[in-house]
Every structure is written in C-alpha cells, then in structure tokens.
Image (tube, rainbow, N blue to C red; front, side, top):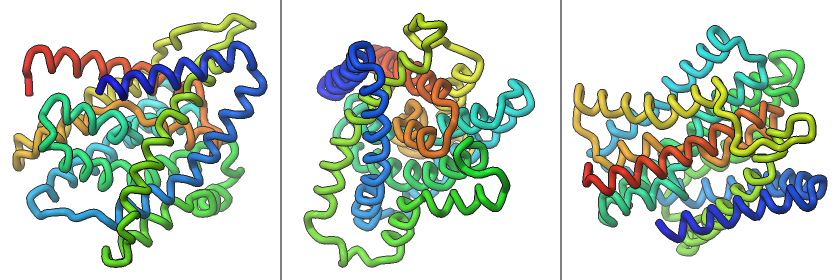
Length: 308
C-alpha cells in the first residue's frame, strides 16, 4: 500500500510540475496519454476477463455491485438534471465520476491491507466483473449521451457510443471465447499494462488538477469542493457501499472485500471518458481527487480501529 501511495503521489506531482513549467506542452501530452490509455484498455479487459472464473457463492454479491452502479447512475442523473440544474457536459461528468471506480490500483491493495492477502482473489473478481463493464456500458453511455463531442442528435450520439467503444467489443469477445484460448502470458500482460496505466492516469490528473481550476490566471489548489463534486463523492464512497451493505444484510451476506470495493474512489478512467466525449473535466478531476483523499483517510482510520 505504501508503494501505491508513493507512486500515485509521484505521478500526480509530476503532472502538476509539468503543468506549472510547461503548461501548453503538458496539456497536449496528457491528452495524448489519455488517448493511449483508451487504446490500451481493450488489451487489459480482454486478457483479464477471458481468464475469469466465477463461483456461484459470490455471484449474488457481484449482482449487488451492478445494482450499486445502476443506482448511482440514476441518482447522479436525477440530482444533476433536477436539483443542481447542470448543463449536459456537467451532468455527464457527474455520472462518469460515480459509475467508474478505482477498484484495481487502489481497491485491491486496500483489501489486502484491511482484510488480508487471502481476500485479494475476491477483490480481483469484483474489479473484473463490475468495474470494466460498468465503465464501458454506463460510463461510455453517459459520455455519448451528454458529451459536447458526441454528436448533435440522438442518432449521432448512439453511433458515437459504438464507434468510440472498442473496449466493449474486447469485453464481449472475452466473454464469448473459451478460457483455453487465453495464452499463458495473457494475464501477466494484462497485469503489467494495468499497473503501467495507473501512474500515467494520475499524471494526467495532475496536469488537469491545476488547469481545470485556473480562474483569471490564478490557479486554485486544492480543487474546489463544489456541489457537483460533493455529490459525486457522496454517491461514490458513501452511498454505494451503504447500498451494498443493506442488500447484504437484507438478502444474503457478501464478502467484506466486496464492501470495501464498493466504496472505492472515482476511477482515473473517468478522465478518459471526459476527454473522449467532451464532458466537464473540472467535475471529474475534483471528484477523483476528493474521493481518493476521502478513501485513503477512511481506510487509515478503519485500519487503526480494526473495524474489519
């Protein structure tokens, strides 16, 4: 966990420093890097999902995970449109921030830290079954429906969803093909690529952290805790795990690893969605930053008091 925090801080700091010293070049570079991450996603998703083995005992818990993602999608849309009266790119950004979650790079180490290394397998299962499909279906749908670069009518937006979503086809292919076709080096490749993607994403976050909060030439740090950002943080790290907990107690107990994963911070992949479809990057950056800080502090507190 210490290594995760150190690498994240170094990548984030590198992005901030690059933006301060080389603003235009850093912004162009982070755009290129987010584009690269987008094209690496199919590799990670295909070789991870095709290797997946799900036992019946955890199936209902994973269904709770999907219920959680659909619930936060609907609530973000409702609050964004009816309560906060956000424009389309801002509403889409709010949705993207709550349906993506950092269940891999942050969630898996936290599960190991709080619950023990024997729970890592369950964390990985949640990370594969819930997070990528939710991102590709719900997150990309939000981008296509609300983004400023997705088209001017429903037909164009629907076409954009399918044209700009090659990771979805990788997911479908991985689900259809038998595990026997997965080469022995496939899972290792996916793991290496996924680990390499995380610091690149946090570098891009660092660049946008200052750029998206520049008012009249004065940079604001930390990013303002605005109403949309607060909504995203609440839905992502408080409401989502609370819903899974309630479902667990009402229907059937789920592993504690699932509860931890359900409460993970907004994922870096929300940056890719915002960049690709033209969503409000300021909301996404704020949601990722504040929710990540909240999760790290909460995990430290829970670990100290031995809650799990």
